[in-house]
Length: 569
Image 1 (spheres, helix red, strand yellow):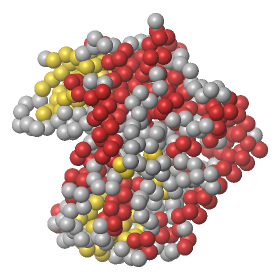
Image 2 (spheres, rainbow, N blue to C red):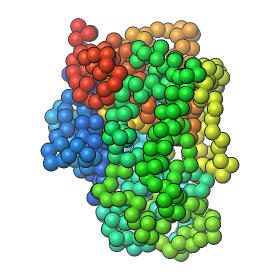
Image 3 (cartoon, rainbow, N blue to C red):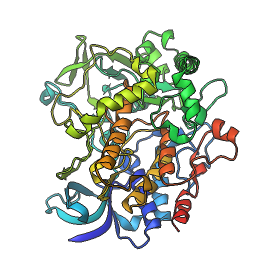
Image 4 (cartoon, helix red, strand yellow):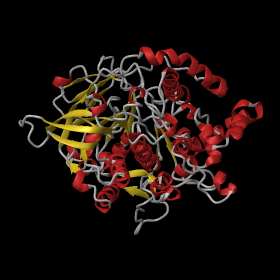
């Protein structure tokens, strides 16, 4: 049996960053990266790319601090093409000699806990599925598959009679080879990826019926390319300290500015300032998009309060006016549930029937990793309620609501809203319960297991490289804050885990915060938290003014790994 000091599952941004960091700190370690795909990149893998795919980020905000992305041939207003992201990640892997550790087309089926000795992995060769699965021993295991590794596709009544393709939005490029020859396209979902697919077909002259579930979250919030008369890049606004203070954050005091946050959320005047900020944000987006200027475009007006929505947002990063095909009838919007399917027909809850050559489902992802874990310990993954964590939820809720009274004023939930699946395997009763969103509390002292990328955020690269360093330190027992034992220590670890995961339920209640971490306005404080625990400087600007009012970008964290290595000497 092959044995490795570290096995990383997932060759996307988090897996690559983790491997590069661990290798730098432990140059003699034997490392293996496993990925079931045929190319590196994760969501930016070659087989997920399609013409017109772009990031929600601008140049300079979606790169690693030690490997700048070239913007040659592009302007300041340009979003990054998907093909360029894939090429960038491949160049990153070449630069830091990660390809030699890579084993693609390798699907990890099971991971069996071997105690302090590590994990035994069972792996299927995707290129030869008839071949018996192999086994690998990992002294340390990092799961870096993120939250977008296994698509969720609902089952429809009459599906066997449909006679046309049904596929998940993530398979768009693979299934339709660009756009395919479909002429009667139906897209289901109001999420950002669905906007992209609808736009791609409309731009190619194909008419689209766009179905947004009446019982779902509705259309996502779509932000213009620039915000306010100052023309601020949206993702930079979220990575500016002043703006992070305006949002409740239970770990926010790790930024060292707790007094400002206390004033804004615990005083009458402060709460008025916060309310004013989010009112202006909502008004600006609604006005820019002109929802009330056309009856069909009005159907895309978001249903939920912008304050309580997490990452169910996107940017209008299209070359043409997205709304024009709606005005001219090329895109038809239906607010209804799909009641069932018949021969090449989609039947809606409003009694409409739609002819279809294809049904594309932007129905999200399964919350649990696509690996079967065999362990007697609780893993902190979505599933059945935990008796241990339930002991702390009431106390955590009380602390959250007393710290941020606004979170107790939750907007009403529509009586029509329901999850798409009641299947026990896909209906999740418990969210991710990982310490610092990375480590199952039961493995704090074992130091054999961690998860990277189990969150959603616009600040992916900044968080990915910081998580990589934190996990590297953790696996080596070099995070002082979690060096301890005994019941009091275990209770503290579990309570902080529950407190942070429970916060999402209240802060992003109209998003997915009750299921997994959504780091929207909280991304910079989260990075501060990790840096603080590693003993690194979290205030990386050169003046108080810049620290508060200038946005953080990946370049501000250049040299982070070397700083930490020097601290250990």
